[in-house]
Length: 158
View (cartoon, rainbow, N blue to C red):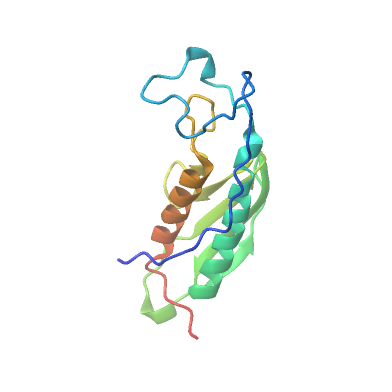
């Protein structure tokens, strides 16, 4: 199964200053050391994940343009701002029933993808200060998960 290419929309990394007035190097903040105990369970500067919503918008547009599928708005669950389900076109190309993908834009801010597993894939995975996730790495990982989920869906006819 070949995963197609998808160009991330531009992601503006926000410069966020720490208590020492220096930019926080998210993604490499702790170097090889362990984060301090007080970084666990604290999500400072959540706004740095806001670009993930734009990535999800662009990803949905890409899937709709390249795959024989439909989109349906879904009821919102707690903490969601928007939710939709992408489904491969019924019987397209004689394909077996393919797993639907439910995407949600969260108020964290972030996005989730439910792919028929017990736990949805989330971007960011955690978002706490200890996890130190870089927004571009998080976006790339999320896109990869969704593109793998729809890789077997039939292509949209030109």
